[in-house]
Length: 222
Image (tube, rainbow, N blue to C red; front, side, top):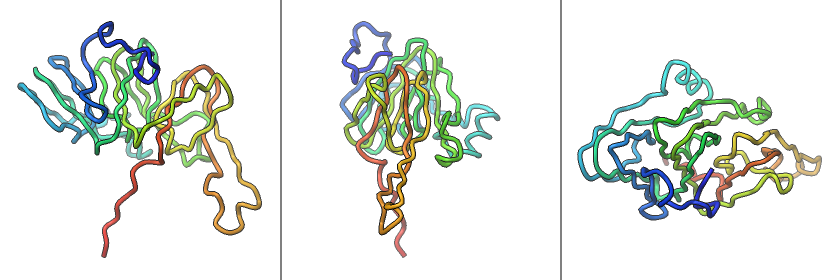
C-alpha cells in the first residue's frame, strides 16, 4: 500500500487517475470511470455522465438497509477532469496493491471501479459496539478517503492500539479488531468520561484516526 500519508507515494511512478488539486479537493483524470460519493462533484471539465450506482446489488442493498453503513454512490463516465470534495474535509489518497482497507462509509469519497467493495461487520466488534459495520475495499487501484481535520496515522505493529469507533476512519484489513472496555464504577458517578469502549487493533497494519468524532449533526430549530 502506498500513500502520501506514509511518505512513499510518488505520483510519477503510479498509474494515472487520482491526484490532489489541494488538500480538500480531489482531481480525477478520465476516460477511466470512477465510483464516487453521490453529491461530491464540485466541478468538471469535458464531457461526463453521472449515474446513480445504488448499493451495488441486492446483497449490498440489504446489508446497507440493515446496518445503516455505506454511502450512496454515483458512477462517472466520460472524458476530462473531474473535481470531487465533501464539506471541505481533508482528503487522503491510498494506492492499494492487491490488498484492502476498511473504511467508515461516510469517509469514503471515491475509488476506481476495478476495486471490489462490500459492507461487512467489523470482526470482534459485534453487538457490543452497536453492531458496527464498515465498507471494505480490496484489489489494486486508487481509494480516496476524507477526514474531519488533520488525522494521525498509527502503526498497530508497534504497540497496542485503540481508537474511538467514530474517529477511526480506516485501517488495514490485515488487522485483528476487537473491543476494549474501560468502564469503571467511578465513571457511573456524575457525568462519566463517555469513553468506556474503544476499538482495539492488533497485527501488522495501520489505523488512520481523524481529529474528531466527525462533523457535528445540525438539528432543525423549532
